[in-house]
Length: 297
Length: 336
Image (cartoon, rainbow over all chains, first blue to last red):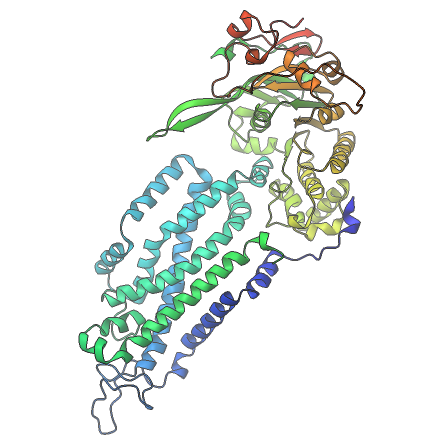
């Protein structure tokens, strides 16, 4: 036996993932930008120069509305004189938390439905997947708007709505992975050893299905942020006076603003763009890093 | 169904001397199609196989790929549901057991797989892989389990420090040893070896075969050894069965089968085994055509379209599974 000549350095699976991820420039840029955004969201009260929800009057008490960018207001002020920079900074809290929580809801529902359908097959699969298909039939945006008009708009409800609408794709991904893994010999071996179904799902199937799920999750975060912006833009999302990037765009929808007051809509638009782009970079990099076949790259 | 008229002729060996008795095992896979997934046809993967295995012996099962030997092994262990037929393991009817009884019986019967790369969970350490059967069958103490895993690693020729490593850090032969350790953990009576060496280099093959042989002596194991390599099967088996298109065509002791094959298919198979002597000139039987589809097997004897001796009866009647000499079974109208 060649065990004596066995010299290869042992490396745990997740250590390899981290090592491969660190070699991906785009991925690391995405991760870095995201970290900065998270820090900004956490420390918003210390970073923002003004209160985001209150108009800033002049010392004489006059309104300071629609001021272009200046030294005092780096990104200018909005229609009632609030500081745009402060609002963009505080809006990151809404966008990032909606993105995160909605994704957790999405992934949880998706994993439960997908793994039950994929593992048990038969009529369980048929019922769950036809239900999924039914939801997939509706355009996501209409479902969200319909749900949002039915319940009171709030951050929490926006998270719930997005989570409850977006899980279908995750469920399909998990199911497809389970169908593949269930036929692999190691799951057959687990059955032959008398391992119970719950443990087979948790220990054998789910860990091996994690790479597509994690990649899907990062993309879900971007979708959720965009959907929150869309809902808020349409006026059925986060309500006044809480700032969100989508709401800020919504408030900038008039010809005079679009034409002459670019400082009102360019900053939140760029914020959305940068956030979504960096998450997608990270997602792409994770997909490559999680593939153990790229071990030596 | 045409398989119904067949009965086993295993009466010569009393039942209490048999560990496994398989009676008329049938496994059909549905072929679905069309808008409403109607069943269009059936793939007759295993079509009425009967055999028995005595404690401590190795029964080899050979046949071309697609002849149903792997399916037979899986159905035997109830990893796939059978279409009909019975399997008796140690006096218990495997197919009628409830979920918990079946789980208990799984301690007695294990499987070693062909592909050492697919048969180990890549996200579990070797210690977890070999320890899992112990855990799920009640050995909850982590210390006890670790002790046992270390013993098993040594038994299969690996080092105890390997238990913290992951499968991808091992070679094919080492992985197969891990798979054997896992199958051995519950001290089973029967191990189905599903082509355990066909994915390995020839030099590693003999190591694994010797290991299986040693383990059989040490633990009194019984093997059902499924393979397509005739010389490997001859090397390890006490008795050998030959499968063709889902059916057993011949079964006899290794010595008998390899020296005096009765079935034309067995004769053809054996004539294809290369001999390590270039001066030996042999009569080779070259079979015509391909193996027919198991969806629509030929009537009567499934081998008749390719058989050089075929007569009218061969295409009309399914040959009986006869014991033409003690423990030499053959399904052929013409064999004497």
